[in-house]
Length: 81
Image (cartoon, rainbow, N blue to C red; front, side):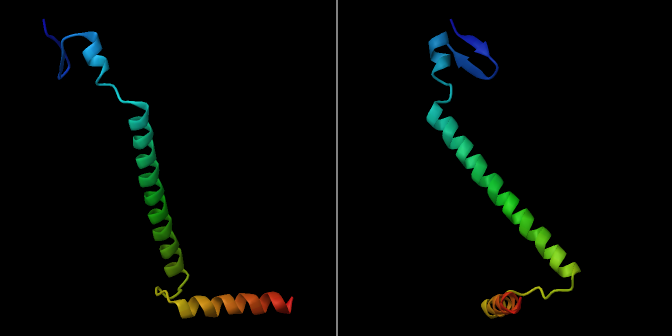
């Protein structure tokens, strides 16, 4: 006799138990969810930082040269202290 539970069909309790997620699958789902959440948080933070930079009237471009110039300026300021 087939028992109907929701949309799944199961003949016995043992067969329905075999459809449960294994610990490895649960771990994989958790890992994937954390990676997606981290990416979303990082992208959101980057967007917020860009908005703050634009409202502070900073140039919206990024280059290695400007980063090195900034690093050199920070280092010179530290040496002057």
